[in-house]
Amino acid sequence: MFSKLTHELLRELEGKGYNCLKSTSHWGDESPTYTPIKVDNVNEYLMWGDLHGQLGDNPHFLVISEALTIPEEQLFGFVLDD
Image (cartoon, rainbow, N blue to C red; front, side, top):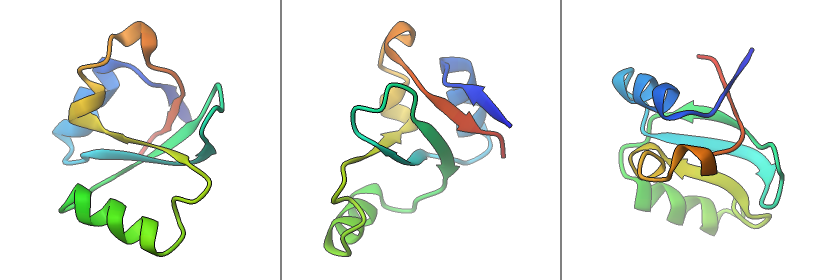
């Protein structure tokens, strides 16, 4: 089941230890779907993904702490419940 992306949901996921949202939806998708993940080092994770061609199609990727600074009305998409 998917839940709408909101600040409340982001704080809940952060409380469970998640720090990023990964998506296979392509950039420009008006309703991307995300999966919460735990990443030790976000910069290393992104570099590894880029080197291995996993970021070539510009998928959506959010760092939860950064997404919490975005006004809620500008957040869009859905998150797979863990």
